[in-house]
Image (cartoon, rainbow, N blue to C red):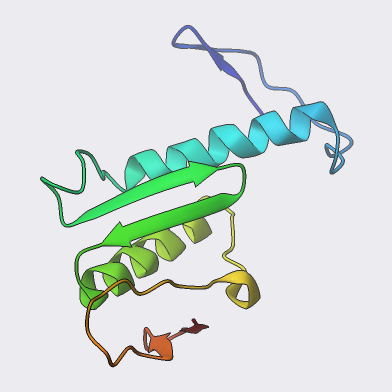
Length: 118
């Protein structure tokens, strides 16, 4: 493994143990990794000028979209980029909130690979 500091890489070194869950360093490393995932999604602006927006706090992520299809596309892209970074989405904890004035609302959303409950 190498570490990059000020655009220079350190000498190669081997890690012998992993960082344990709950260790202060593990939360920092997770946050740095999740930040790089969200940055790679290239979602900028606010909801008035964009069709979608994303907000993260800890390991919770909120995706806001103007249409159901934009929400599905954003989720699929997030899942793909997260997998490339070694992170996974827990489908059992994935939920959605549908805000509309319409009387009929979907009871679940299906992406083709996953489906979420309301």
